[in-house]
Length: 297
Length: 245
Image (cartoon, rainbow over the protein chains, first blue to last red):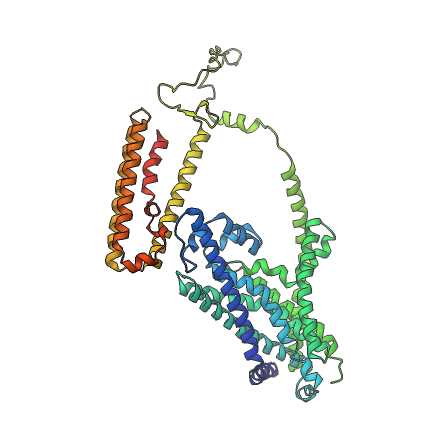
């Protein structure tokens, strides 16, 4: 495994040297700050509406009425829609709302960013033929795993930066009752976001093994990620309408989105979902390796 | 060696996914079947079922206690003498123990306050209490944000608000005592209660306004000065005792 570690380290340093890491962190940061800004404004509007309905003066800085908003039935409906179950929503009542929003946003955004960033990890070196020199010194499987691990580290660092940006944005724009608790929850949820990103990083690296064009690999990765959401939606409809239930069952099991509900678990239930996501990520790698193993480098 | 180990790692991942898919099929099919059964059971209209009521009657121990005892020979209950029906159109009167309360309904007709009505009153009072608590909290937050009072100013406003709430509790107490007397408050009584409450609130608004500097008065939202926002839930607690009457 030393080879895998060295290749992962090289991948990370190369990303820093070529400013790709900085670009990725910036991308995560901008997206998170923008989403945090919209979140704070949405909370502010909801609070103003609540104050208006009660005939009392509204506060300019959002967050003052957060406890009252959380206690409302409307908020419960929103939480239920985000989590997917009443039971899960009730168990999240103690978690800061900004942290819940961050995890939800992570489930939507990180797959696309992760798949897109990792799609060029191998394709770019196959295009300029530089990979043959690496392949001389180690096995192709170790090479693929190393790049995969490097991209995972990169995604982890970017996710952590995103959590910091969310914390900063919320602290700057809102009245936060417990900043330390919020930071703790954001950090804790970053681990889950990162685990959910594993299958998509794997898929990106797999796409990168299929083509020598980094652009095409990125298109395949982003398209595939979007397609996974479409497939998940179709599987849900199939389950509800009882169409080919066995096919729907298989789809839900092999799609990472099928394990999101477990990721919301405030206890230890999310660990199983994370393990499955790691398994799905490794399986995705194999999908690309089938082609890469036979390639003339 | 590195290649072998790497292959094992990937193979483990694939095996995990394959195991999940194959192993999950059975439980998921079982879950689906149970879901179908549960949906079918939920769709069935149970209709009027006397069994629970009868079981509850048996569990009372001596269900005939309220009526006549069963006949020792036949086991049948002696038929009760039918009470004279109340004349149609006569409004219900409060019983001697005061358990029944006559209210005027939305249609203007008098009727006896039922248990459901009482529950509704309690629910409405709870909602009012919650709304007052939220208004109170929000009013203080808005005051702090817009005025940024000095500790002295805040202390003065807190004192004025505490005095107002104490006075409003007194007014509510007087109202409750009047109702407890058995007579509904007269028009003049109601006007006196309203006047007392308004006088207190006007004095509180003046106290809040006078506590602020001219600059603060310019910046502040008019709603922040509204004394009704600072009324606390203790007033509702006093009025809640009316529900027990």
